[in-house]
Image (tube, rainbow, N blue to C red):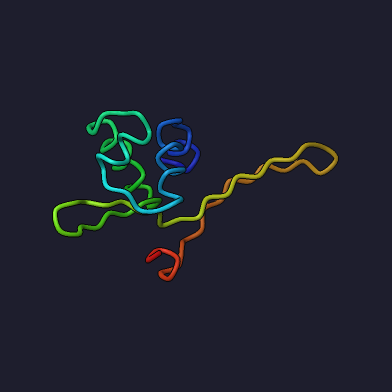
Length: 96
C-alpha cells in the first residue's frame, strides 16, 4: 500500500495526529478519535504494516507510537509543488 493510500483515510490521519503528541494505548486512542476498538486496531495494523507506527508493551497495555515524521507540502503557481514525504524518527525522539 502506498503512502498516499495509507494516509488517504481520515481515520488514520486522526490516529497519526493523536500519536504525534505521545504514545497511546488502543482503547485510549479509540476513545480520543471516536471509533470502536476493533476499528482502531484495523487502522493501527495498516499504519504498522506501512512502517508509520510501531507497538510496544508495558505491563498490561499495548502502546503505539509514531516511527515516521510525515510531511505534506503543497503550493500554487508560480512555483507549484506537491510533496508527501516520510522520514524515520530517530530513537531519542521516539523515547519521549
